[in-house]
Length: 376
Image 1 (cartoon, rainbow, N blue to C red):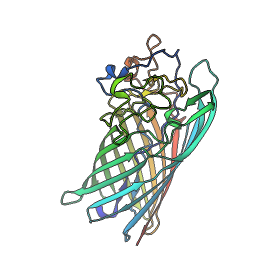
Image 2 (cartoon, rainbow, N blue to C red; image 1 turned 30 degrees about the vertical axis):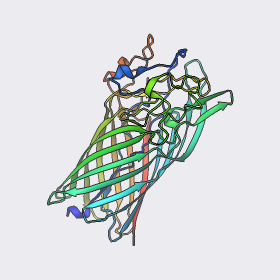
Image 3 (tube, rainbow, N blue to C red; image 1 turned 180 degrees about the vertical axis):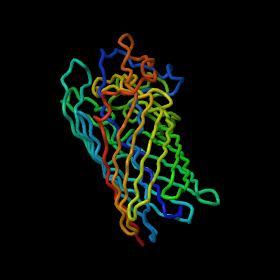
Image 4 (cartoon, rainbow, N blue to C red; image 1 turned 60 degrees about the vertical axis):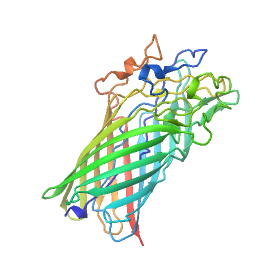
C-alpha cells in the first residue's frame, strides 16, 4: 500500500518573515567580520524553517511528466507575501525522479532600517531562485529515499528603493533571490500503519558562492568601487565554500527535519499533521543597506533565529487525475537576541538559544493550495 502514497517536498526557495534591522552609526571603514565566525564569511539573513509545507497524499498516476503547483500566502503583523511555485518532474526509472522548481513571488510590507527613521511601505516581486532536484528510492521495500537539490541564483538580490543620490538596498525578505547557490541533501523514510503512514525526514543545506567566469564580486564597479581590491579575496574569487553573497550577506548552513502522520481513514481524503524544525549552523549576517556610499559594511542579523519550528496541517482531496491539497502552517521560533548595544559586530547575542517568542505565536501564518496533474 506504500506505493499509493506520495510525499513531495517544497522548493528550496522559501518565504521568510520580514526582518526589521536595529541601527547604529555606520563605520568609516569596511568591516571584516568573517574572523569572528571561523572564516565562514559575513553578511546574510536570519535563519528559519520556512513554512514546512509538503504534499502528503495519494498523488497522481499514469503520466510521464508530473506538474505540481503550490500557491502560498504568508502573512504577519506588518507584512505579507504571495508565491506561485510550479514544479515539473519526470521519472527516468521507477525508483528515480528529477525535477525543477520555478518560483514567482510578491512581497509587501514595512521596512525600518534604523530606529530613528520612519518606516516605509515597499512592494517587490518577480522570478525567484530556480531549483533542480533528484531523488532515488532505496531498499527492497521502497520505504526510504535519498535526495539532492541545487538552487541557482536566478532571482535579483540587490533590489533598491529611494532617491538617486541615496538608494537603499531592501532587506533579504524583500529580495527575489539570495545571490547564492545552495545544495541540499535529504533522507526520507516512511512506515505504513493500518489507516495511515508515518513520515520522517532529515536534511542538510549548504549555501556557497561562485563566479567561475568573471572571478570577482559582481558589484566591484558599482557599489564597492571606492574600496575594491582593499579587502583581499572577498572581492576577487571564483568559488567560496560558504554562503556569502556579493553584497556581504551571509547565510549559514543549516540542518532540518520533520515528522508527520498522514491519515487515510476516510475515502477520498488524506489528512496530515506535521512538525518541522530548522537549526542554522552559524549566525546570519546582513549587508549594508546603502548602495551609493561605497562602504562594505555587513553585520550580524539582529533578527537571527537560533532555532525555529513550524506546525503544519494538510488535507488532500484525492483524485487520481487532479488532486487538490490545502495546508496551513504556524511558525514558532526563539526570541531574537538583538544587536549588542556596545558592538554591533558581535555575534554573542544571536548565538544564544532563547525561549519561544510568545508575542509572535499566532501573529504569523501561511496558507497554501496545491494542484497536481500528470501528462503524456
